[in-house]
Length: 261
Ligand SMILES: Nc1ncnc2c1ncn2[C@@H]1O[C@H](COP(=O)(O)OP(=O)(O)OP(=O)(O)O)[C@@H](O)[C@H]1O
Ligand SMILES: [Mg+2]
Image 1 (cartoon, rainbow, N blue to C red):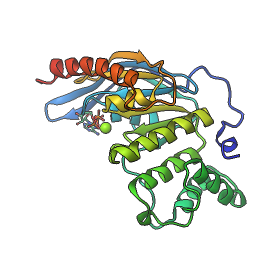
Image 2 (cartoon, rainbow, N blue to C red; image 1 turned 30 degrees about the horizontal axis):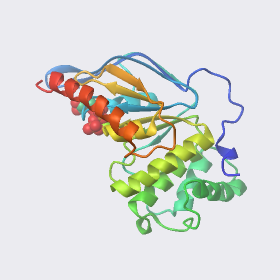
Image 3 (cartoon, helix red, strand yellow; image 1 turned 90 degrees about the horizontal axis):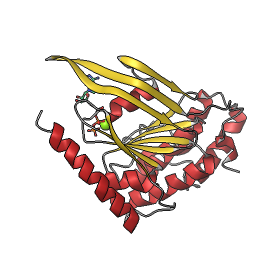
Image 4 (cartoon, rainbow, N blue to C red; image 1 turned 90 degrees about the vertical axis):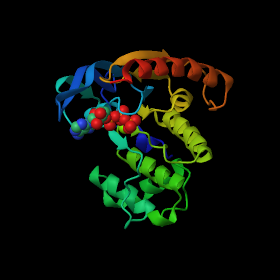
């Protein structure tokens, strides 16, 4: 079974996958310290799917990088249930390795014994519906296929938290729709928690159980919505469109309020 290897092994029971407490982040800029994130407090529950939504430059990637441990907050604290795995807009696959070997490398780094790696990589490729692409090199894959391999590689890390930074932004609308369906299915099958960054309101509503809207300059939690629309959803479903409209109005207000800086 493809899913069994993705379940957390001997997971301790914690009540969050990520806990962000009073986090602020400043960067040194030409005009002194620039406050990018201001007092962000946010939990992601185990198995929860949260989208982080906000205008360009509001600090979404900065926050995700902090949760990933790639950078440190200026103030506040972040704890995660184990080390999270990451997926970005660019696939960041190694072009000299095949799809399968890219996944096997992640398994190797996780300490999976050599004789198990090939089989597990095959299972992960099956999970992202790329059976048969094991031996393909990155340049032989379409953009959507590359993102699937990147997703399989992220899942190979067997983390309980998946951090995704606009992973489908560069794809055409139809491929993106398909990958939304796949991600929703994989999320349900594996029980992984997801913190997904996007500036696309419809995408946020299509995917999440909870949408968290960040304001700009500095980024603060402006509002959040629980999304009770049953899955699988389609991006063009009326309830998705309706809630997206409501969120867009609030987002526009945020941009108007902060845009003139
Ligand atoms: N390492 C850094 N040094 C200085 N400033 C930074 C650094 N990283 C980000 N910033 C600044 O922090 C702000 C937020 O950037 P960030 O990349 O987090 O935005 P974002 O919400 O992800 O935007 P987008 O939707 O365009 O990806 C920007 O003003 C950016 O210039
Ligand atoms: Mg970003």
